[in-house]
Image 1 (tube, rainbow, N blue to C red):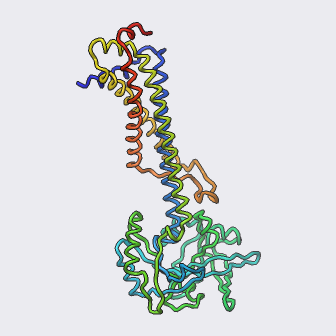
Image 2 (cartoon, rainbow, N blue to C red):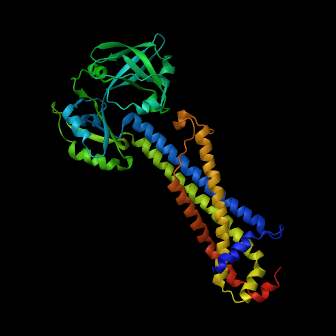
Length: 414
């Protein structure tokens, strides 16, 4: 039988005198561990949810990898590149690539009777993955965009619709100014809202055919191709494959191809998201310190209150090591109860937020209307294990106070 474990279990289950100082100390230590773990779980859930939500929104507009004319990366102007059937097959055959879609960008002005607004028109074809836009569609429907004809349908953001006072079904004129002024009349088919201001305030979706024609390009020329990968964690591996087989190759018009990942296309956004990791580590460290200090103070109080018991155990031949292990087991029981409380509290808050959206945010500042929380069971288990091990580790030094307790003096201790 494990004697320290047996004695610790009896001490922990002994309710004894309710006036004992150790009872409140145990409750405080349990609450300290529980609240600390709950805060850590919620913090990790919020940061993961926030990072993945923002990342998915940026990817929804820009894909994982963009293949364009190399001149486009070094200029504010748009240069065309040819993506014929053979090149599309090459891109689709790359290892790790899940989907390939063409797009064309052009600039123009939307004008109503009362106002006007400069916007970007992104032309997309029938192969374009509309999953992201469907998730954020708030009014109307997403039309089937074409690469062979112009449907004169336009998908705009809620921000653009509010500025120009447009609704689904309204007609709006678009002006494209180059060497001459060209006019097109569009019908608003749908309105989306992602709360990503940098995209929502300027981006409209239309036919690939219309954007190519407005730019004056050949039928098989576009601004580029967007690649969606199977595994975001393997993005760089897939990018290396693109670099090896596609970059620096030329199209039939002698234009050179190059590529960039979503990290390179929007470095400010991802740098900002990476800074959140620093905040997480600071909060985790603080919460572990809180749990550790409450456990240390609780253990010292328990040792002082059990001085007579320690003296008796020493008198009957128990070693300091055995007694120290007894109190460490006792601390482990307290920590275990605190971890259970922390998991219930932390995961409960996450589930409440995910089902009700109780805690809201300003979407203009945070890009989301409510706090996103993500459940990551392996990471939560790791937090539990780390909290348990660190809390017990910091108690090893205070437990050596037992070796300074003498049996003769402890018998008379009150």
